Length: 254
Image (cartoon, rainbow, N blue to C red; front, side, top):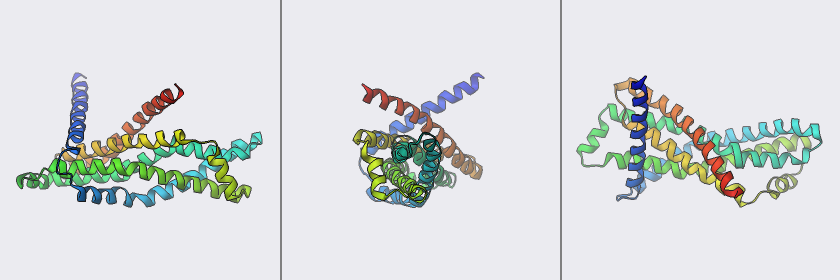
């Protein structure tokens, strides 16, 4: 029992030091802008179809579920507000982070683990190339930049799905739906939920890179790094979301 507890805290400390090193090296030259742009394309652009389709389906389902509850109280006119609040403030950022963790996180973990076990990372170090900065920092920065953009896309795709559902079921006009959806929301309802996805991006990028960069045991280690990247990133994102939501509510309620 003591061994498992000690191993857990040792792993937490190693990940923490890994994250601090990422933050330090992010602001140290060279900045590897070309590689950062390439990683933004790989992590962000290639995840867009999944984000858009999932967001549209999520919004349609949210509208259907909300309608079933609202009709019992004769409050169908509040469906657009419920959909927009649910997407932008609550489930949108979390679902986007989980989707990125499942797709990009697994890819990052498997890619770096494959490079580690085939000694490609060692080859970069032998060529006097800072493998940590070139491989890890660029991917973490790309995750941090891509997450708010992908979250915004999922929110608006979900709103489009909810609008399509209401147009078919209630024959509500597009203008009326949008007015009801955004009429009672202010910038404080948009900015904090989007801003917290920066933390989600950092968690996903750092943890996935750590598991891949430190992988061992050959091909088995590659599979292990990929699976653990998804599982641990998702768990930490959910825990971080609970803390951030409470912090945002405390900050803006005061």
